[in-house]
Structure formats: C-alpha cells, structure tokens
Amino acid sequence: MEAPCAAEQKQDRSLMRLALAYAAQAAALDEVPVGAVIVSPEGRLLAGTGNCCIAANDPTGHAEIRALRAAAEKVGNYRLPGSTLYVTLEPCPMCASALLLARVSRIVFGAADPKSGGIQSVYRIGGDGCLNHRFSVTGGVRAEECGGILREFFRRRRKKNRDAIFSLLKN
Image (cartoon, rainbow, N blue to C red; front, top):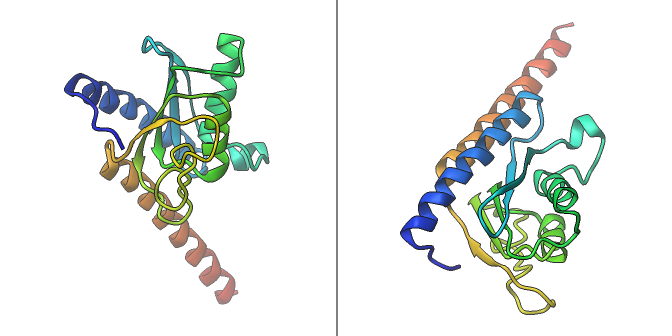
C-alpha cells in the first residue's frame, strides 16, 4: 500500500464520504451497504452508486461493478486508465478482477474484508504481479465509518430474522 500525500488524503476522505452516502442509500433499500465512486484522472466524478444485487436480482450488482459500467458508458470506453475507485468495503475477487480489466489505476477502500477481500485481506488481485495490470491501493480511509454502517446493517438484519423466527414459533 502506498501512503498518500496530505492533499490526496483530504481528497480521499472527501470522496469516501460520498461513497458512504451511496452505501447509506443501498442500506435504505435493504441492500448490503456498500458504496462506490469513480473519478477521472483529473478528479472529475464519473460515477457513483451503491449495491443493488437484491432488487435487480443480479449477483454482479455490486457497487464497484455498477460504478464501472456507468463510468465506462460516460467516457465511451470500457477502459478507465488513470481513474480512481473509492469504495466503502475492500472489493471482492469478482470486483477486483473487473477493476483490473478496466485498467483502473488506484483503489481506495474503507473497511477491510477479512473473509473475502480481493485486494489485500485474502487475495492480492492487482498487486501480486501475476496479471498484466496493477493498481495502487490505499486502504483504511474512514474505516470506522465504513465498517460501522456494515455492522449496523447486519445487526438490524439479524434482529429482524430473530424476530421473524420468534413470531413463527409463537403461532
């Protein structure tokens, strides 16, 4: 992982706040609260979105994939060289591979994913030297906030499931 300069750290925190807003929108729709934002090499917003797997019945409806699709459509190219992705949770292997194919240059994530992280926690896609593209990675940006929205979402979901089970048992 590379250590960003002070100006880059400020921009990273600001854009991660925007990704968190998309994560909150996903949570409000009962989707896993992950948000992603892609910016051009000049720092212009290309796309931003949250997870939408459940409502779209789409196993590839992760925020990163949806943001890649929107950004590629906006620039008219499936390749996004020089771009940066900001995402609230470390990308999974599917998303990391898509980011690699899109030639995204930098990944900034909030919370690490120790169960299925595709960039540094479990796998090292894009950084292991095995493929024909690499991206730089900055992790832990607003990590507590990013992890907190996920913990709260799953806490509420577990409570909702427990309540539903108890309700069934009473009847």
